[in-house]
Image 1 (cartoon, rainbow, N blue to C red):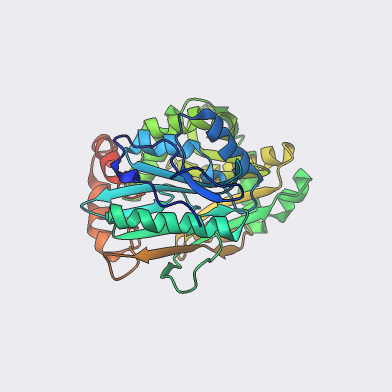
Image 2: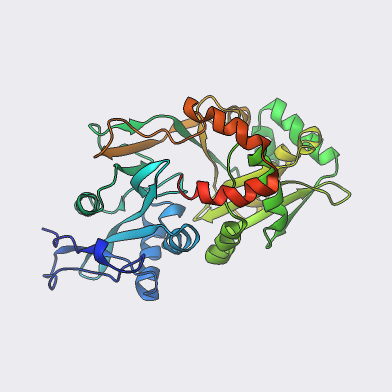
Length: 372
């Protein structure tokens, strides 16, 4: 049996030191909590994540620092350990909001999450500890953003899909794998002599991103968050900017790199980008560079079914794969729908579009931190 759950909610700081009850017997599985200041354990955590088939970029320990510092959410990054060897991890964060409710989530601001484990025993112990936490934290619900379904009897969210595709070894083969209509758009961007470059500063990217989400009526992440991602993940996070021949920024994307995959994650486009095909050129340039680096998978990320981004990725020849977000409901009767597709937010979205962008960029971080 695992040790009893430690009294984590009583810890004064956002993250607690690794905790277990009593001395672990040889061969006994213990669930502990990561202290991100413990660099040796954080390294062991990340070594496990990089080697675990079910783990993703969003299971890396650095997300604890990002979420706790940038959004002030309390983090509970749990790991299961036996005889000094980590067998599973479960990153969790508590999101509390008067508007959007109270949840324990794995993981907010991430498209993937839940348990990553080498054994069923480790996975079960981690989930049991998460549910024990909920008895003390008293959230409305517990949410696991799984790639694969784990609990057929749990309520689940079927709104989201992910798009992943193999990167071929030859650049021209990747070009020809793009369906004809979108391939023509890529070639249009090339013909327009668009330029792509890596940017270690987020200023140009943020201007494109913030303008883009404002036009869609949704709040923007704070600029400091994007810089924190580059600082935290180093070479594993990268901004690509596409500009006109005259140097005008048209389109940008912040991507993550994990194992042999590239994940374009945050993006933004100027209004002028459409006529110049800068958006298609941007993703082609990212794919081309990933091919040159020897990467194997292009993860186009999450989209809601029936949206423009869903259709765009389908038009690139990517097939959707359902994501299996699962929920334990404690103080609510149904799965939460905190997304722009929810009809009750339509008036808010219309009003947001009318705000001056400077006001929206100031107010947005106070709202988006609670969305997760």
